Image 1 (cartoon, helix red, strand yellow):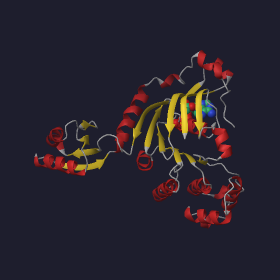
Image 2 (cartoon, rainbow, N blue to C red; image 1 turned 180 degrees about the vertical axis):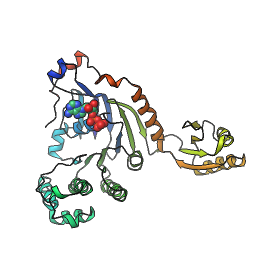
Image 3 (cartoon, helix red, strand yellow; image 1 turned 120 degrees about the vertical axis):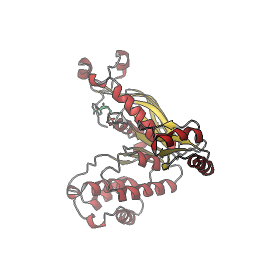
Length: 335
Ligand code: ADP
């Protein structure tokens, strides 16, 4: 459904080039998102997540490489089929009302029976009391919920969110998670691509997490583990004596933190886990906690983020070889 092939995106025009200030935001990204998939983009600030999202929406063109959505250029796809988009910073005309904004979107998106749909979505996103209020007078949370309402309004096949639940309280984060699951269930072909700093949320919502740093895909982590590896758990034990017993019960246990008491362990399902924990406790170990570790996203993420900090980022943007500048599109934002 979505294909990125060796995508390079650089910012900065010819002047920046002369000054050696061009920024390579994406550096050879290849990514395929099949129909029905939910993909979470994670990575430190500046990793290239928003740039990738803007390429998918057709707001930017790649400097090199190709981007396709539904077999078309992203801009063509967005024009013909529409893409549901929840931006990180919502910008709507401040004088519009909540209801007016949704009416405007439904007119653009050719929504069937708009009045009814709008009423339903307003209720669903808890916007009833502010439906007549102007955008300028909305709280951050309400504004974000309006953006989500607008994204859910049209019957799109593709949804793209850039930190779309930022600014929502935990109750609403959970509700939106359920709405997204519902949205996906309603059409098994639907594709969701979202950038988030909340690894918990990514583990809950996405099938795969794409770890980006410095414009490159560092790892694609399978979070559903279907045909994937044996289920992993985070195991925390009390005291050094307990820690020493862990590898006996869980061969291949991986120490996770400097304290030596937390491990990533694998077990072949609940029964095997219980049997191994039994053996560990029998051997005299005291167990503090056990939790599923979906794909080990957290640990992989932190390992990679650490590597990024060590990279010589202080010199500014990575220099771009001249050959790569042959295909300059000005690099500025805008349609
Ligand atoms: P993320 O969303 O992961 O924080 P971005 O895609 O926003 O990352 O940014 C990737 C890199 O591109 C950063 O170094 C950022 O400073 C740079 N960048 C983003 N937008 C622009 C722009 N419009 N002009 C110049 N540089 C930009």
